[in-house]
Image (cartoon, rainbow over all chains, first blue to last red):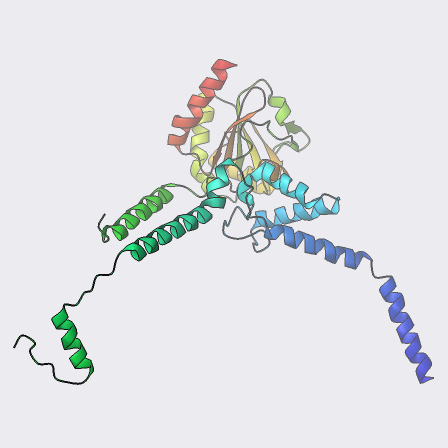
Amino acid sequence: MHKSLFLFIILVCIGLSGAAPSRAADDAALEQRVQRLSEELRCLVCQNQSLADSHAGLAIDLKNQVREKLKQGASEKEVIAFMTERYGDFVLYRPPVKGTTLLLWFGPGLLMVAGLIALFARLRRRASETVEPSLTIDERARAVALLEGRTPGNPRK
Amino acid sequence: MKWWLWPLGLFLVLAVFLGVGLTLNPREVPSPLIGKSAPHFQLPQLHDPEKTFSQKDMLGKVWVLNVWASWCGPCREEHPVWVDLAKTQVVPIYGLNYKDKRADSIAWLKRYGDPYVLSVADTEGRIGIDYGVYGVPETYLIDKAGVIRYKHIGPVYPSVLKEKILPLIAKLNGNA
């Protein structure tokens, strides 16, 4: 009796999981795509927030648009194209690489290369400089005496 | 170069960059729609919802499309500019009433004056999205071929009208 009840429950669970790719799962997957995509898009009303973070009226409208497009079977790329056609590259948190954005994309790398070149040039110059003894013979003797714990006498005398 | 000049140089470069940054307006997002055909719409008219109006009805004319709403503060700021411009009859001004309630919009126009030949109601804000609207008011200047030639985001002040919009209207009317 106990065993058969257990089996029954297991079977019911399997049955339910089999029916699971239903609306709920579809909706969750869709929501996830909407969420992921709207994290890539800038809210134009509050420019330092993404569509996903923003509760501005326009952001909600745009999120609904994204959801609708995806539901109609549009790809992520098509939705991004839809947005940039209307709002320009500015809506993208990851702007495309093109003439006007070259500095944006490669500026930091350039700066780093320039920094490295400057650093190496400096290190090299420093290495090639001969280190001149900065102590005179008298001073050196005085230093040795101090290190050995003797009171240095006046070497001139 | 003396070593102590480096921080000074760096500071000057930074100051120049930040100074230029201060003069730019981050709200002015360049519109990708300039030079392209005005997106299609066919919307019910605000005062006469039985009738519709489409951007196609304006082919052959230079006209202004002004996006406004009764809930929008800056719209009231720019409104006298349109009321005055309408009196001169230099250019027909059409309104896109954006995400608004009909009664509110009509009351607003009654109170502040109605410079529009007519307004259309974009209740859902769908057409607004097609036009890349993200801050009301926005203003579009559309040429005889139905191409958007100029877009202004935010209130149009008399200086903007005089220095940018009016000369462009004259040019568009003269050339085509």
